[in-house]
Image 1 (cartoon, one colour):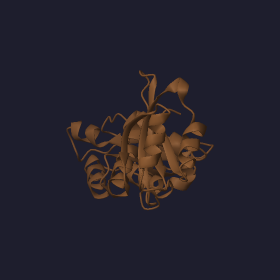
Image 2 (cartoon, helix red, strand yellow):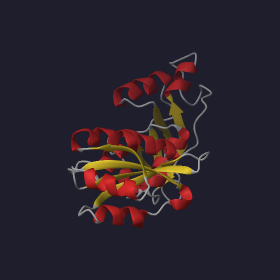
Image 3 (cartoon, helix red, strand yellow):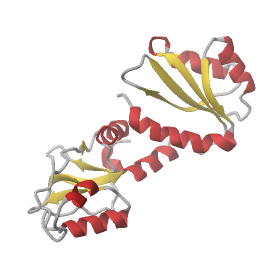
Length: 220
């Protein structure tokens, strides 16, 4: 999935001639802490709720209010993970999307992207969740998949979280079995560190939380 497919149709951009009060009102209505500001087809930047509240005159226009705009955007052909990484690095709730000529196409929001990600990564499928910790040099998805498949199960989805200052990484896998006893025993036999495991009843909520974690630590 690429950025052009993430655009939220019902999210209009602000204009430089809009007032700070209007920007705050729209953020409250859309339940966002950022909005794009567009002049014609050109992106001016992203205005944050924090910046607006720091200004003295809410009736001043964005153009005249001496705003500090955030200069971040995604291009239409960027992969969804790249878009997520941009939003994570800059703590954004909104990301503008531009074409190859840097014309504004639209914007996407963090809730919209997370909903799409959840719906396309088998989060809603029945099964169990296993979180493994491995050294970065020892990581092998092929071996992890082989262990799962040796127990007559298969991996529905997986993702990795890591921190730049650590040689460890966490691999979260969703498998199509609710009873994880044999799979966990096999991971133990292969000396894998199982950080956490969840059956279907409590795994779904946690894996959604882990996608939030992914937003913070996604390393492309």
